[in-house]
Image (cartoon, rainbow, N blue to C red; front, side):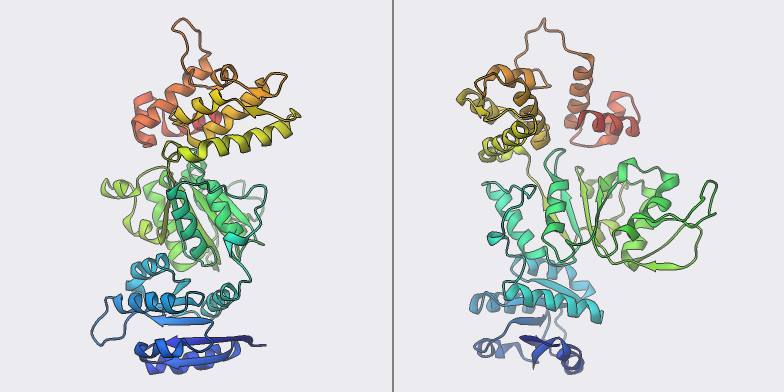
Length: 447
């Protein structure tokens, strides 16, 4: 049954218009076709729900600027209408820029019929307010806390636009800034939220097991392969695949991942049959992938593939206006978890929290508040003494204070990572350990 909606297709190629007339006739109640974007202002006076807009119209001109211009005009004249950009592969970067200016999503020519229909259907639902209106959504207990900082507000705006799409997302930021939380939030707000959110810790997978972990294997494909194994790509089919710490993937294995992403298919170890995969890919790292590309440590073509949308989470020291509210949230969580009743933060504690640099970011704040709740006094107030005792870095400790070895090691690891701007290979070399050992210590100490 056709949707009770109207789509306007704007493209200067008459053959494309005719093809889409038949293709979209069983999706929309009314399909309008136009080959001249100059007619858009008059057409938008009618009831239009979705616009499928080409990026180029003038012969010989392929800059995509025409599409961006008419996108802005559509959003100015009728902001509630959702616009899907129609683009060639070479113009994907411009299409992403269009999403930042208000486009719902983009579709690459030549298009996949099913994917085009689904994208346009999702756009129609948003026009009608059926889903993905983040501002009006009821917050769930584990939902992302956006805070009040301008940087986080900008990220939220982008997430509002991309959550319903299948665009690949790269999330960057220091350790502890909440990259995994943001990835889960994007999945929660997507059309895929009723399917699996599969997490792969790329730093914890050995080279020998990489293909088996990601793509699976068949029985008998190697020693001890007693049964078939489902890989992470297959487990995430229809849902979201989150590759955490993508920068830790060895260079020699990057082509294998790139091939799976490009072809949207994979081959199990021990098999010759390609398996199609339908995933939404989200990657995260605390390292500068552009620098890694320049240093020959990360493939440029892989970076382009995973970096359709780039979201950079700011460190906590750059969003001080959010520190106290985050602290209150953690206090409430752990007070309930440990049966501490009503626990409050003293004014002095709030001052200490705001003035601290938080090198471990939100994760460090969370751990400090958990320990502070456990150490809180009988009147339910967390004072500066508990906060000082809760800091692993020994804030304002006296010179003759003996620090436990575990705390000393954690501080050294944390300092090495900071001094090397998150480059784990350099930090490991400075500490005289392997990168895998460093990674294990980071896991142990929650860094």
